[in-house]
Image 1 (tube, rainbow over the protein chains, first blue to last red):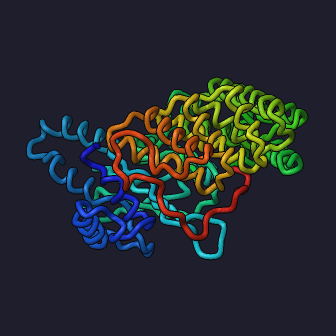
Image 2 (image 1 turned 135 degrees about the vertical axis):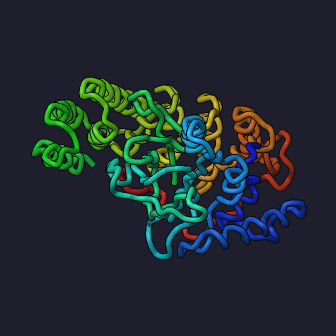
Image 3 (image 1 turned 180 degrees about the vertical axis):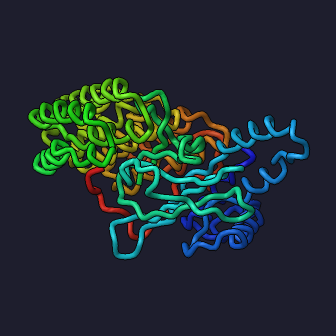
Length: 184
Length: 227
C-alpha cells in the first residue's frame, strides 16, 4: 500500500461507512488517530472527514526548503511533482431526503496559488468550483453535492495545469490526457 | 429520452456556448453536424456536447477536438448496437454508459453480455458504469464483465454494484492484483448463485474483514439523471 494512503478499512471509517467498533482491533488505534487528526485540520461542516492527514504528514517530511536561490528550480520541480499527491474524492454519503451524494475532493498542491475542480458536473468550467485552502496551506478541499451517476473530472492548478487524481480510476480523455472517474 | 437530447442540441445550434466562448464557432458547427446525425440515429448528444466543452476548456486545438468528437459518436454507435443486440433499445442513458465503458476499455461484445443478463435497462446502465470503472482501476475488461454480469444475474441492487470498485480496491490494497481481486469476487458470486451460501470474500490475501462493506442508508436511486 502506498504510504500516503490509509488502510482501506480506515478509509471506510473516514467515509462514514463503518464505525470504530467495526474495525479490526489492530486498526482501531489508526482509525481513532485519523479521526482525531482530521478533526484538527478539517473545519468544513461535513460530519465525516475525508482522508488527509497521512498525506499531509508525508508532505511535511518531504517538502523541500528553499534556502538558497539556486535551489529554487529543483524545489519548484519537486513541488510540481507533489501536486500529484492527490487523495481520491471521499463520498461522504447521500444527503438526507435528496437524490444527491455529498463528495469531498482533496488535493495536496504545494506552492499552488489557486486550485479548482472541473468536470462533467460543472460543464468543465475551470472557474466554477474553487477548492479552499486549509491546514498548513498545501491542502485544498471542496465538497460538492453530486447526482448519482458517472462523473469525470480533473483538478486545475493555477488555472493552467489539468491534474487527474492519481489515486482514482482514470480513463483516456480523448485528448492525450486522463480524466478521473467517479461513479456514484 | 430523445427529446431532451435534441433540445440540448438545439441549444448548441443556437450557439450560446460558443457565444460564451465555451467553444469556438468551428467546434460548434461540428457538434451541430455530428449531433443532428447522432440524434437521428437515437443516440444521446450530451456526451458529444460535453466532450466539446471539455476540449475547449482544456485548450485543445479545434482539430483534435473534432477528432475526439468523432470517436465519441463512433463509440455511441457501438454501444447502441451492442445494447440492441443484447435486447435493450432506445435507452440513451444506457447508451451513454456504454460509451463510457468503451472508453474505459470494454468492447461491444462486453456490453452485449451485460445487456443479456436480463436485468432492467436501469440496472444494466449501472452495471456498465461499474464495469467501466473496474476497467479503469486495472481490472481486465473480461474480468470486469464477468464480475458485473454475475452480480447482475444474482439480482444485486445498484448499490451493491456501485460498491464493487471499492471492494476490488480493498483487495488490491491487501496485495491482490486487480484481476485476482475481481476473479475472487466473481467466484464468490458464483458460489452464491450455486446455492452454496455466502462464501465471504474473494480468495486471496485478504482476511475475513475484507468482505463487502455494510449497506448504506439512503442509497442513490437505481436510475440516476442523465450524466
